[in-house]
Amino acid sequence: MKRTSLVLNDAVLADVRGMAEADGVSLRAEIELLLREGMRVIHRERGAKRYRFRPVMVDGEGGPAVDVADRRRLHDFMEGRQS
Image (cartoon, rainbow, N blue to C red; front, side, top):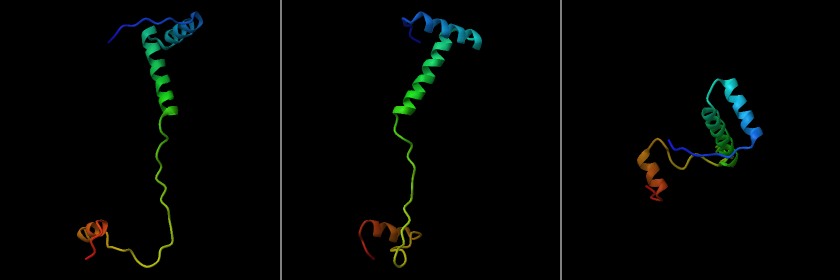
């Protein structure tokens, strides 16, 4: 664990001290908790949006081009080899 110094506004420090006292934890623990929560929120806001798979349904013509249960034929089809 590394040590560091912070310069905090007096009002902010008083608020954090009050929060630490109310939570029954040390000032260091309260500041660490607040930093972690803040970083989590920022990461969520800046991070990529969650990927949602949205399948596209279309009306097809005829049956499937290959039986997906037959792995050999499926691989051949995907690689452009017709049997």
